Image (cartoon, rainbow over all chains, first blue to last red; front, side):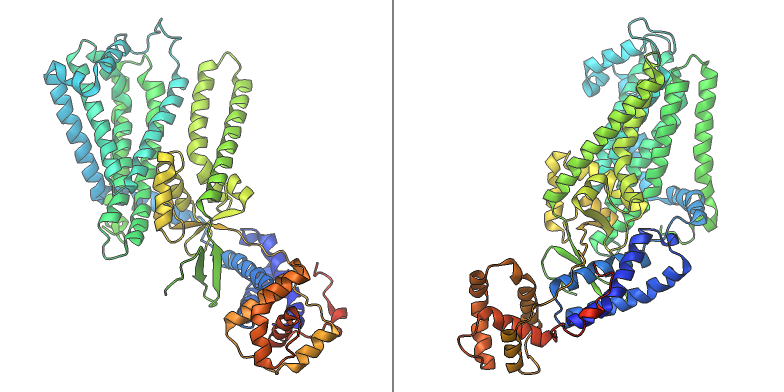
Length: 326
Length: 262
């Protein structure tokens, strides 16, 4: 490719550069003429690039054309934007179906509830078990925390503050959930250990409080938000397990392709988990810690359980499961 | 297709064009990461300031609650929002000319941004000194950390041509030498590329250095094309390149230079 050809083609290159610059990332910024020109210019410049490479054009010309073709390619073949109907189908049909039929969710639930029940029974049955598992200082701290009825002003601290605690739960618990998912990248083992750690600590605390004198205070506090929070931690671990399982069972694909597929499949569970953590934080901060009667808190707990169940029930229709890998 | 072991990713488009993206290495990405941490700190301070001004000292508890929620949103949302909606660039990446692309070379989706950023808390520089991510980068072909592998993304260095056009300088001696060469120059495309590179870059060197660089190849070309043995090696390389690529002196088309070719 000689200088004469380069100069002749340069006006096309400049025009394409201008169009690509103007569009940025968004096709709709172009008017009709520019859109039509984009296709023609892209093909022409692709040809120029091939010729430039073939005929040993100066490297800077080749580099410039490569960069230009790369940018117009990205504009033409960019990922499709958010389709509102597809999004709706994803959230209300495919995602619940996936959650309902995903073995990872069942495994996570079995491990979590099983470990929690076992440790709760152990801690409730024998005095020393709780101290062995979570340590004496934490037990004393728990007893001190729940010594007062929930919602009364505690003279030793600066007083009850719902929004502060809601913010704290939001930040603290959701971060735990997200990290629990992220550790799933290590073959799912990280998620599972995080899940079991949480189950054991929660079970022990439950068992210990049940046999202690402050059981009423404790259960009044945890009733309202436990449905949201426990489901959330199970789902985030299930998402991590699903992703990690992609590395183990490749279904005949390459291991990395399998990881990519399952990581994508895990996203609905992760999204649901994050949403539930945020709901749980608000319930925990504003309902659980309030002076509302126990019946009202129990009602909130039941309603949240009902919401979760009815969301999952959306996935039971056969059309929702269609097209989904098991 | 077998890919050579180097630091660029090749993508074949429907037009049969091979796009090459230089892959960003760990050092450059760490710099971008540190800049992003600074940016996040800046956002945090701004948010804290705004909250304090809005709530005043009366709403200390509520303000702290908001601040914690804001902290959560910034720590987990910064990368996702930036990469998902600003076409794969956080502020730090933009400053260093990096961009996240999907492995097919397309801009990344929000789902991919979520995956690589959430997993980033496990394999990023903040956990285990980043050893997990670093070891993943050394064994993966495109310097991908675990989050990149799961999301199917890679981080590339954005190339942008500077719009320069190569215009060779001709003189009488050079033109005479070109005329002595055969019409068609036989040679591998490797030779062509070497000659093209030399012709484009020689201006950056002083004449003695040019002669030194050109001499080994010029010796062989002089022998092959029966040029005078005492020819200037620099001129020989340029002459062969200009002959093979068909460049002509620019006398005729100087007037036709497009006005926009700045």
